[in-house]
Length: 223
Image (cartoon, rainbow, N blue to C red; front, top):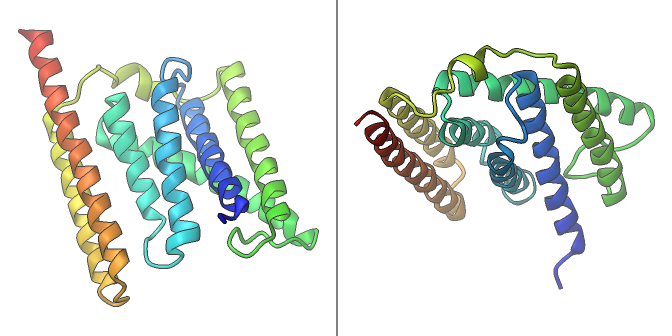
């Protein structure tokens, strides 16, 4: 029988990264309601990847995969240039890490195990509920008070992308996966290679499909 704790951990991985996405959008004044479908897709994709990295793989696949996926999805779904997708992703994740550090410090003082792999399910639930509450509250506060940077959403979201963004994104994906292959060669676990290759082709497939749709959109718009 499947351990029900698996579903709880998966659920909180998804909701926790939804908090990261919402906070990232709030910081840069990107309309949350306008992109609610994109936020849902990014939350599910990055949440599932976080769960895999943390509880299935545990060693080989770097958390940088999560950042990479977040950047690519921002670029593809919001049609933001790669550079600005990178700024949004890294800023949001850095802010989230500060919140996580704050919660970790409190949990240590209370004698709790903040390690998400080794803590009990009740510690996991409590810490993640506090984390989500802080992240969603911060997002709501920034949106309500209209605090944040608006230069990205206001100036660079044209509804389409210049093709060089896809070239650089493909180079980023290929370079990152080649680097990871060198790391995996030392581990000698077959399923790590299978997961890596699968994810590689999924990301390239997303980029190729988005590139085709983007090219079609430009042709229809300017023809």
